[in-house]
Length: 219
Ligand code: AMP
Image: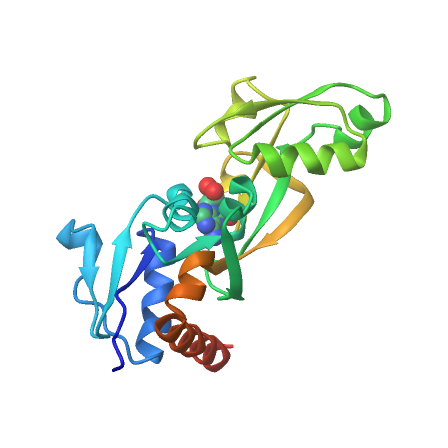
């Protein structure tokens, strides 16, 4: 008997959901409703046994790690901060692409500050990535954890620099900041719970293959 295991895919609304639905469509999977308007957190799809969980972006790895979702879609930034425990990371979906950058106010002499060994205050949501980046460069920093609007921090004297995601660069420009160093390129990845990969292999593998084909067709 071939049974179709129920598969749950966790993802966030906004950019990731908006850029995932065309990939799902290319794989022949229609999403029953738009969570932005329906406010529903569990959403069915046209693929038997596949449902979507709408969670906060930073919670996606947690749902997948604990098996509350079998699969998830999250940015490399989020996965890096989470650490990746319990997650199998099979596929770069190439969506929600941007760069994690260090940025400073226009006119701030970053190179000079680094040269003189100054201790810099850096505001960011990405503590782990920032700590490793500056440690590798031998730059002394005090990291200040923020949950959003990092661009504001240097404008009001909270920090000398920020680490944030940059896409068009418009947000930096609008706030008189300039990007000075790239920490990593970022895009969204498909992650799979390691136990689900083994125990639900018959359901997971065809879905991974469908995503891989959809990504290749979109490339
Ligand atoms: P931009 O003005 O296009 O450079 O976008 C920068 C703003 O959008 C910042 O507040 C970033 O945190 C956010 N952002 C840019 N790209 C992404 C992404 N791929 N995922 C999540 N947030 C992003």
